[in-house]
Structure formats: C-alpha cells, structure tokens
Length: 173
Image 1 (cartoon, one colour):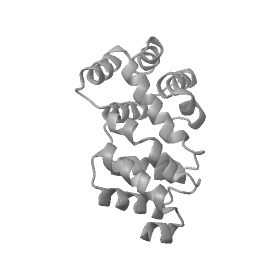
Image 2: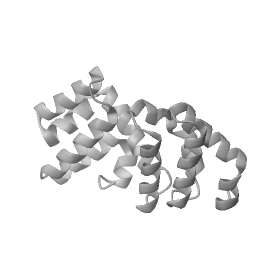
Image 3: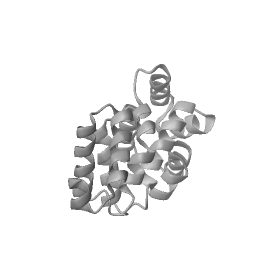
Image 4: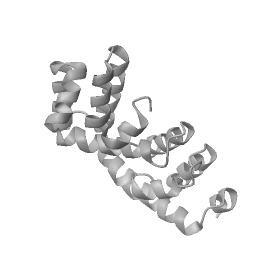
C-alpha cells in the first residue's frame, strides 16, 4: 500500500508486477517490492508504463541472465534517456532472441563489425552456455567502444543483432 500511496499506482498492478519479478528473477516478494519502489523513485515511470514493463518482460530477462536489480536499472536508464515506451528493454529482448538463434544475418553483422574470432567466441559461448546473453551484450558493447565502426557496420548491428527496436533507439543505449 505504501508504494501505491506514494507513487499513485494501483495495488493490484503493484502486486502482479512484484510477483512477476519474484517468480521470474529469483527474489523474494519483499525484494521485488523494494525494486519497484526504487524504480518509481528513480524515474522508471516517466512514460507511465513501468509496471506494465515489469509485468511483461521478467521471464525474458531471466532467460538472458539478468538480476532483478539489473532489470530495474535498464528500465530506469531507458526512461532517463528519453527512449520511447519500452523500446530499450525490447531491444535487449530482441538481442537475447537473435544471439541465441544465431542466424546468418546476426553472425554476418557481428563478423563484419568485429571479425571471425570475436564473433565465434561470442556465439559459441552463448550456444554452450559458457556466457549468458548479458555477458555477450557486455562484451559486444565493450568491443564497440574499442573499434572504429563504419555507419554500415553500425546499421547492420542495430538491425541484425538488436532488431527493429535497436534500429529505433541506436546503439548508444
């Protein structure tokens, strides 16, 4: 009731969102409520759909290897960056799917940007479970900072590795 009173949200929506966080990201219901409160206090609800995102995406992010805190941090970051609706979190969801599917387009975009050795390391690591999607994302983000990518390479990464939402928000997120 405290979160509802403080942030003007419906108790039922808070309970459903906290339950989704708890069940999918391995935290207690109380810890989930703490994350919701932190999210609200940190600006995650700027677009007005924080609880909807929390209800929709936790299972995807469990699969990607994120913690409840990391999940909340992503929603906070996309809100503060002015990213429309759930585009940031959806781009990461798409990345999770594409990096696991390992289509020719995804592999070609990664290889074109970073070379065969790096690409094979990432894809093999994800495929065998040696690295999580989150770890792959971190490695790709770091490598992007280290190399001088062309506009074409950037565009292919956005579209073929992060999907249409990645194209909408760019790689800066």
